[in-house]
Image (cartoon, rainbow, N blue to C red; front, side, top):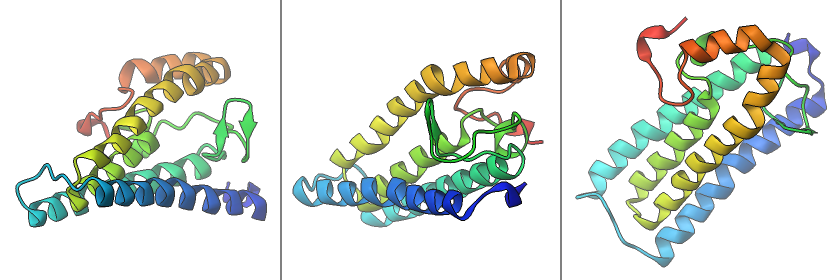
Length: 173
């Protein structure tokens, strides 16, 4: 379980998490400063919506990483042939993965969308949009082929039951 991970694995996880959260967030703040055009009627509404969306996204992402590491015994720092952490040893279908097949991607999208709302910046919405498009591409062209190869029948059954991105909330296991 978690004991299978080395100090290097946890360092990669920490550095990657900070990079994925802070770099796009700083970029969004810069965009908002350069092109200050709002899209919500008031800053208070934006801050409330933003706080809810960002908190939900961050919680979903953290929960998904936890499940991947503890149930799947692999890490999120694997992208095709690039393996900065151990690859999952078993298919994770419980917890957030029972709601949608890509909860980390969805969580990051919600986090960035929330930040766009909180800073009320129309042009900063480019970051959640790019995140959504990139997440879809990675899921379809990188993650799914590997999961089909490694977990054949189990993956196919899970994919029929659980949507790729948009959760079905009555399915939490």
